[in-house]
Image (cartoon, rainbow, N blue to C red; front, side, top):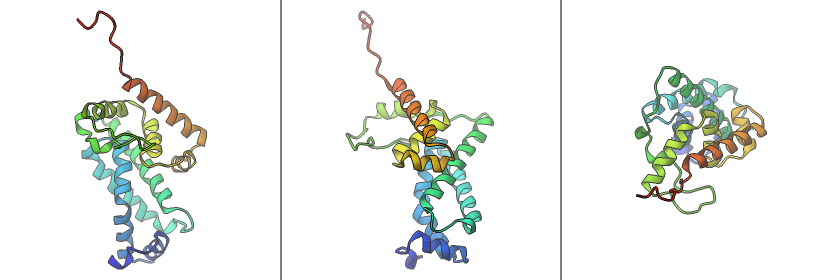
Length: 194
C-alpha cells in the first residue's frame, strides 16, 4: 500500500478493477474518513454508523468494475455514501429505533461555520445544534451536511442525490430555516424573570 499513496484515484481504481487488492485498500484508507463523516451526520447514531460505512464500502467494491474513471470518484463515493446512509436511516427508523441525542457526540458537528468565522466551542450551543439536526427531515439534513460539512455545491449535491438543483436548494433552505427556528434564542418576556 505504501507505493500507492502518491497515485491518483483513477489509477488506483483501474488497478483495483484488475484485481489489485493493495490499490483497493489504498482507496479505502484514502476515503474512509469522508464516508464515515457523511454516514455519521445523516444516520446520527454512533452505534449504527459502522454498519452503514461497511455497507457503503461493500457497494463501492461490488460496483467498482462499473465505475468510469473519467468521472469524479469522490463525487460517486459521496453519492453512494449519502444514499446508503439515507436508506440505512429510514430502515433503522422503521424498526422503531430513534437516536437519543446523548448518543450524538460533538464531532458530528462542524467546528466553524461555512465562512470560517468563530468556532462553535460552547457545549450548550453544540447540544442545541445536535438536537436541531435530529429534528429536521433526513432530506434536509443530507443536503445540509453535504453543503456545509462537505462543502459541496448545490449542483454536486444534486448529482449525489439524483435530484434537481432547485430541489437541493429547497432542502438546504428549509433545513437552514428549521435549524434557525429551533436554535433561535427566545427573548424573555417582561415580568417572566421573577
